[in-house]
Image (cartoon, rainbow over all chains, first blue to last red; front, side):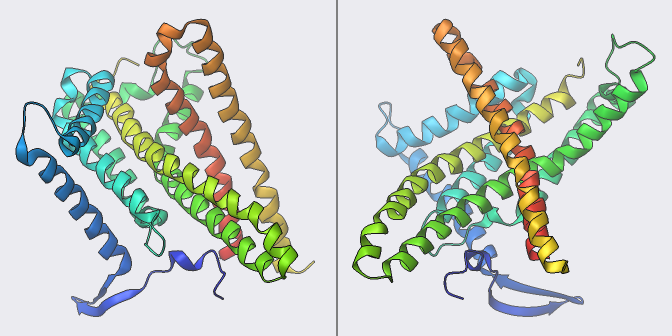
Amino acid sequence: MANDPIHQFQIQELAGPFHIGGYEISFTNSALFMGISVATVTLILLAAAARGALVPGRLQSVGELWYEFIHNMVKNVLGPEGKPFFPLVFSLFSFVLVANMLGMFPYFFTVTSHVVVTASLAVFVVALVVVVGIAKHGLGWFKLFVPHGVPGVILPFISLIEIISFLSRPVSLGLRLFGNMLAGHIVLKVFAGFVVSLGALGFGGILGAVAPLAMAVALTALEFLVAFLQAFVFAILTCVYLNDALHTHH
Amino acid sequence: MEADAAKLIGAGIACIGMGGAGIGVGHIFGNYLAGALRNPSAAGAQFTNALIGAALAEGLGIFSLVVALLLLFT
């Protein structure tokens, strides 16, 4: 079905499958667009940093804004101890932002609309929080789940809730990005489908199709906002979660 | 009732949860704006917190969307 709004998320094998060690591994359109995302980030930032002029030009300004935006965020949320994590947060933000933005081009594949990609990123972030927390505070890090100042009677329940809320972090972090990109792209295609099916009805239908077309244009603008906002939210939630690992007083 | 029909109805019911997320996000930004208009000088520093709150509230709505999609496509 050509108008199927789910069709755009189909993974196609571009090369392969290769059989390596009993696994089937193929080069898919998802892998291709992940590569394009990384290459785009690298090229833009390299080009922005190439000149290093005292008065920055347009491209250099973009690079500096990009860098300072994340730098300020990490500094505000994590404080001076967060400096080692700046490259991680910057890479996560850049990859998610560029993958989201590339997905907005027609016929381009949206890498972040697959839960396997976003969940891997999210599980990695939360596993890192556990590792950093235990490395920095030892077993005392588990005091995160036992907030002080709570009456002893309800403490077990509060701890249980804290543990559940911690365990749901990788789920919510991954699903938020996945769900936003998936839902946004489906809505865009559904409205585009309205234009086509109304336009097929004749002259009156073409007049009526102006409304869903205008809606599709407005939704495209909204999707650009969402693409940026979700990358930002992913990065800042990474910072907030890492803050739990670095500073345990809760 | 056929199993397919029950699945579709279930997917529709699951989407009601997104309304709750909408209420939550609206509350957060509404209250942020109300606070920002009272004290504009403090607004900039709190915008990040407003976005974090909106993202957390929105995530729960996304859960119900995922439940609906799971019902539709599995």
